[in-house]
Image 1: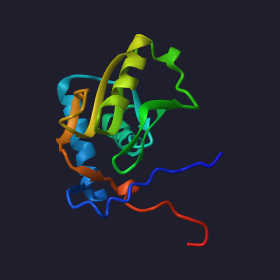
Image 2: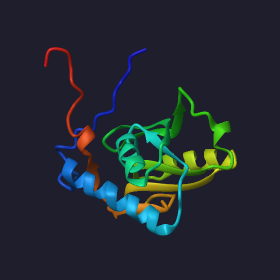
Image 3: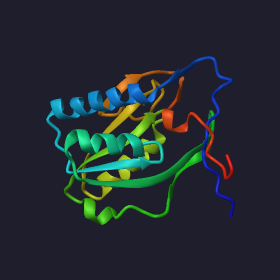
Amino acid sequence: MTRMAYHADASGLEDREILTWERFGSASRELSQAVVDSGFEPQIVIAVARGGLTLAGAMTYALGVKLSDAINVEFYTDVNETLADPVLLAPMLDTESVAGQRILVVDDVADSGRTLGLVLKLLRGFGAEVRSAVLYSKPRSVVAPDFAWKGTDRWIVFPWSAEAPVKKGQ
């Protein structure tokens, strides 16, 4: 089985939003502040991997939350290309341990909202109190995140996926 790492070469798109590492730092703090100001106190931060991993890590520090985990979901395969439906990938999150917990689910973007919707439904089905936080929310998303740093309808270039994966000998 060939493993394909998603990398979106959006250089040909004119209408795109570029998030720099510096702006990401500010955005993650602002998003964390919104969570604190809301009164929601998560016990666990769960990243939607891979896009939400970097943001979730930053937010665990900003929120002072020590428990974190990730749930692996595949949906996007390239720029504007998706699978028919989001798919949960192994290894799986220990969903039985989330019952009764306050969880903040973190992803980079709520684009269609289908990935976020799948994860929220799964965790709520196991009895968790769940909120969601994303850097960007798009108007077409079927899920309205509880916390979003910014709304946009443009393609987003994130600093962690702005360049192709490294290869041996580069």
